[in-house]
Image 1: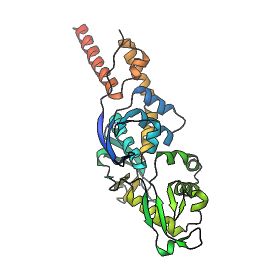
Image 2: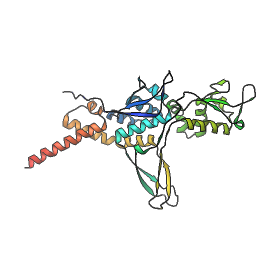
Image 3: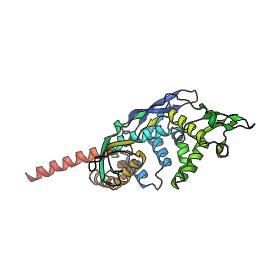
Image 4: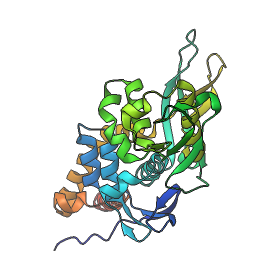
Length: 308
């Protein structure tokens, strides 16, 4: 008899930014399902561990948004903070809310290893208040650029970075070319400079460092935020520290480290229940482990009865 697996239990979460549809309405409520075993295996085994995999995951585990079915194309349109937030929620749905990481004390005279524990529910989330597709900015007089007529121009229009931008810049970031990546991102997000539309890399290149700083500051102010900063005190030197928490790296690392355990779970359930690998891999982690717990209790009960 074939095992019939009901859809994985899901949770409804509110995006800090949201999806802006063609009518101008902002949709923030989404339904998120935990990863199945097959999805865990794909991510853990993938050579690519960047934005493209996050796009794939969101398209698989988010049911939809604003009445629109989630696709990879739609996942690429989501703001960077929304994608991070969804990864945070997927991590909680898959591994639980408690996070344990080891960091080094930033004090070079100490450099002790420290265990840091926190809950994903304590990560500060800052929602966007605007929900606009394009933002207008007037640069300061000192940051003005030369317009097409050679006269000083200060008007800039920009959009916020999204998943598509992350994928496009992946190769530059992989080669640690942060300056080129920053310029390429600016070129992708600046919609207009004065009357010039979609100026591109060549168009934004003449912008002064001050102009770039003002644009980036306005982008940061308008964008939602997922603040991945850990704070604490070193138990060795008692020094206070702050350290970034990279949810994407943590998420992928956890899946890679538990891949062998996934295969053990599949073997255990297949051996005792005679379910196929495909059927077991369609289950999320919590359901697999629930069956294993029930099975272990039953085996222990039978063994105890046999000894009496």
